[in-house]
Image (cartoon, rainbow, N blue to C red; front, side, top):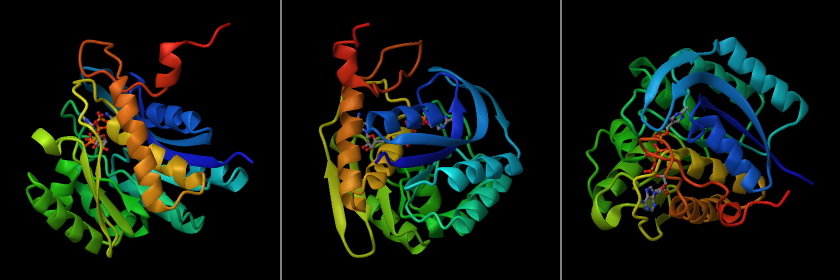
Length: 269
Ligand SMILES: Nc1ncnc2c1ncn2[C@@H]1O[C@H](COP(=O)(O)OP(=O)(O)OP(=O)(O)O)[C@@H](O)[C@H]1O
Ligand SMILES: Cc1ncc(COP(=O)(O)O)c(N)n1
């Protein structure tokens, strides 16, 4: 039986991050991907030119349409953009009792654009984080959520412990933005166990969409029945491979290669 995963996130017109990255990642994992769009971005590898949010009612209606008919074995959230959308998403998740929830607390893009307004951060902390099975902040998001400057494994640990107190079942502080050997080292804390997920550092500047891809791959693996830590381990392996096959396209930060096995030999017609 095919499993269903739902992404609640923004559209990236350039196809590297957001809903587009999530659906490619779900498809790679042979999970049927459904989506609830929160906003549309006019975006490419160089940056975000414009953002238009959907109404919170429209976001909730998409979630209702998907879950009411198809159900969802796992859900991930990405760019939620404003407080009203966060409140609508929180309400829908509670109403439908969606329990396998990966929250990627997207705040700023790789290219520096704000993807979440300031008023929304408090709502994210208060409403959404306590519902999360796993929250996956990057270095900067973990700093904002914990109030701690992150530049070492020790400060990642301190931040993870503080963020765990905010209510998610588990925290994964991602090290993609860290310097030197820590680049690509992620730290897991679920209130009891600590684990460091380390893969090789991939030398590439084409890293657009790594965070979206990781959280979508975690959700896909949860939908397939993996336990939380195994889902993270598998997702990390996938994102590393996709980074190794990142696409040098556009004039800025290219996206990861979601379908890397097909890139070597495209399907014959
Ligand atoms: N150069 C790299 N080599 C290996 N792993 C990396 C590299 N860059 C990022 N990663 C991994 O990619 C995943 C995403 O982490 P990252 O810190 O880049 O998230 P992010 O900033 O939310 O991503 P983005 O905002 O670009 O979508 C993590 O598992 C991280 O360790
Ligand atoms: C719609 C959308 N969602 C998420 C991101 C974050 O991804 P990145 O940090 O790689 O730009 C993005 N740029 N756009």
